[in-house]
Length: 465
Ligand code: NAD
Ligand code: UGA
Image 1 (tube, rainbow, N blue to C red):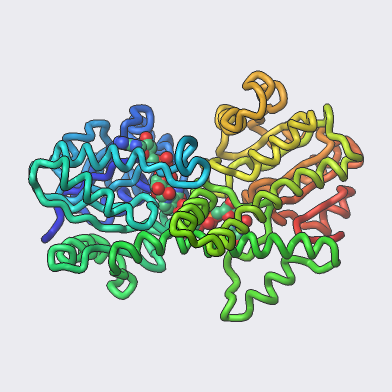
Image 2 (tube, rainbow, N blue to C red):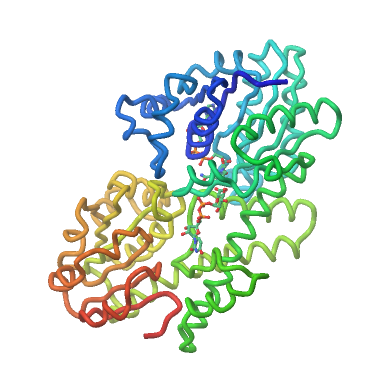
């Protein structure tokens, strides 16, 4: 079967870039991305393509190349479902904040709503593709809803998890390590898999398109994120030991990374990993393991989160301790708020938790991030419900200029590894700060030697100066 018409439900950080690249690479396939969020769809349709709601290097060019030709953004979910032969579900699946599994299980409310809507609208056979990250065996629930509430049409369910990382989404999509497609092992299932393989085969070599059964595909996504996050927590655990022993975590990472069995990637010590997925997906894995009574498995993976929470907390505690045990009334400048460079996404960013801890100590926080505005910073802090929105507003101010953010600051904390931070006139920043001028580099991006030469008191992660 050759697919001509695709619909994607969910125009977020995954749905937007993924479908834009499919449209760009498959000019004869019509791709419609739908979302309930009107503002988001309006932003994707903004005449000025620089205003699309997701910032990713190279994305606006890809969107511009296909939008209005074979790529469409719409709020008319039903029409897009009706017309499509293949429907991707790419809605958010956050951690449950209520009821059974609160704080651990994935909230599948949005997924279920999509399934019910697809079933209600579909008048012809459809292939439904899980693009969202889902607990293993979700396809079973989807099948039950689709088959029991539909109009008698046939549905094939595929799992096609997304492995893109934010900040590099476009290159990851254009040249992925692999694409994973899981489906039923019977003939119809294999035909559905082949239909999706043919889409990706337009630009990805066949040997990188992996096909498995549905459960392996669903579980591989959670496992990949768990392994990646585990590497960050592992190097961060070693970073604390480095600070005590005089070892340098970058040197240790380099030394172990040259072992081809370990490999050099994902060994950058940091203030802790953030992002909407690592924590959510590991909690989900832990919850699933517990559900099956696998408590040792659950405890093993939960430790990755415990270590990450510790890393964020000890970074904030170190700032307080170093500033003579009080930051009350002191201006602390944050360079970076996004959870990593080259994205405007701030979900679960370490900066939020470090700021929250410092606000508890009555610090005044001045934020500069090249892609994040004050509204987003305050939204993130208010979401924690630690204090009133009014108190957050009093304690935090965002600046459009990094030099202003750092002016008169007692300390600077680097929370995101934006490249531009290396290029600043650090002498000028030093001259305008309170003395002693402290810098806490939570990403090890600044040149420590140069900074100390200027006069800064400098702290990196996993380093003892
Ligand atoms: P997102 O919050 O940016 O986007 C999800 C969108 O879905 C929102 O715009 C929301 O309005 C829309 N939506 C929710 N319910 C809907 C419904 N019933 N009908 C129509 N629209 C609906 O989320 P995201 O970051 O794109 O993540 C989506 C999924 O992809 C998650 O499961 C996530 O775990 C997974 N994932 C994310 C990344 C990433 O880098 N962000 C990478 C790989 C996988
Ligand atoms: C991650 C995975 O890398 C993607 O493969 C996956 O598709 C995605 O999650 C998802 O499922 O959402 P992402 O969270 O966008 O992608 O970004 P990463 O590059 O993985 O970084 C995650 C966090 O770990 C960031 O806060 C980053 O700064 C931190 N990190 C990463 C480190 O602290 N050290 C490292 O060595 C690497």
